[in-house]
Length: 206
Image (cartoon, rainbow, N blue to C red; front, side):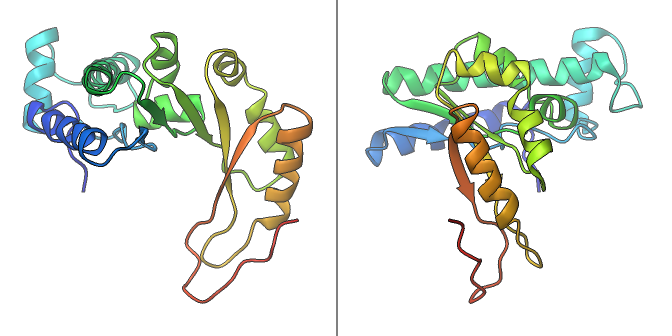
């Protein structure tokens, strides 16, 4: 189930929850993971179609990957992120506003997350990019991308690393990725252990 991030009631709900975390539980910040997003095939509900028609005097394109349609929806999420950031900072100016999206190209095209614009508009204080790759080469390629380097110049930036799935372990690739992130690019790294059945222990990465 997905909540429509374009709808005012959804925006109010998420904003209220974020403010509650910051004001009632003494949190130093809030991590939105990759959830400030929407799959690019979404947006054909009645509310969003009516809003698009009102603003553009056109029907939404049938192709969910139409560049103008992607941009319009991504801009709507950016507008909400701006409001959300302002609401959190108004209550707690030093709060850490953190996200963990996918690498930029896939985040934007597949999930309507224009996090590079968020970075440039100072809407995020910490970035953890989900670089879930099965081998060292593809991991290093992603950490070397210009948008990652740009982020590292502005805010704390780390890499989310896939440590395993339900039926497989990526421990070797993770360990290699850790070494690469530390020795080559001095990345902060975050280890994410995913979908292992209860009682099944992963191999230890050394």
